[in-house]
Length: 234
Image 1 (spheres, helix red, strand yellow):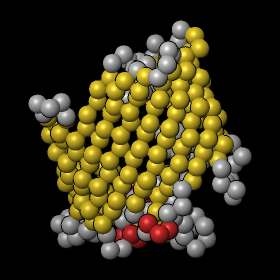
Image 2 (image 1 turned 30 degrees about the vertical axis):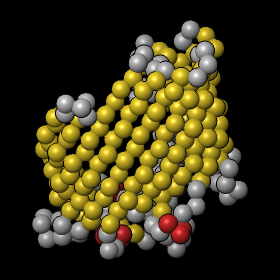
Image 3 (image 1 turned 90 degrees about the vertical axis):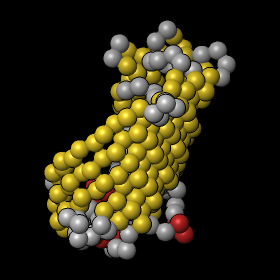
Image 4 (image 1 turned 60 degrees about the vertical axis):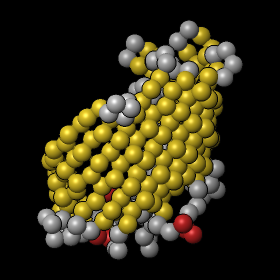
């Protein structure tokens, strides 16, 4: 359960980047797994930069979207824990042969904190899902507790490569590989990988994607997963 309120100032810079200064108050009751629960209060100031450029929406042949965010909190200044968190993501589209595209995506995050147990679930990193590692359920990847339940991690690394080919005026086929995970220490990082194929319909409401993804981990809970998403490529 999360209550959040805040203010922000958004400004477009001369170089095309959008800078956002923000201050958020977050009150959260959380439970991850069976052993980790608590109540959290955070006052989190931060700054983010974002940039989007594309040539031919809704199916751009070249362009990219990037975002970088820094936020944190100080114990005793309204907050009940201290942390510093840096997160970034980027997605690039490249035109290939006639009707073909290459789409690449990457995201990474890092948290500086003494005790992860004091950080609420909504501020931890998880992987898996429609826009993360397909083939795995939403937020099903990350460090686990003693009973094997996913509780989230301090850090995150995820990457994706996809090839998209037009087969009709408003339809295309895609093949992709996603890989990554959330983790606490770099020595504990174990990448989870999913591969799959999909169909894209460039509808009047925007691209609609239907994907079937297979996880490559031998102990994955599902043999395959279906992912349906709606929204722009960038």
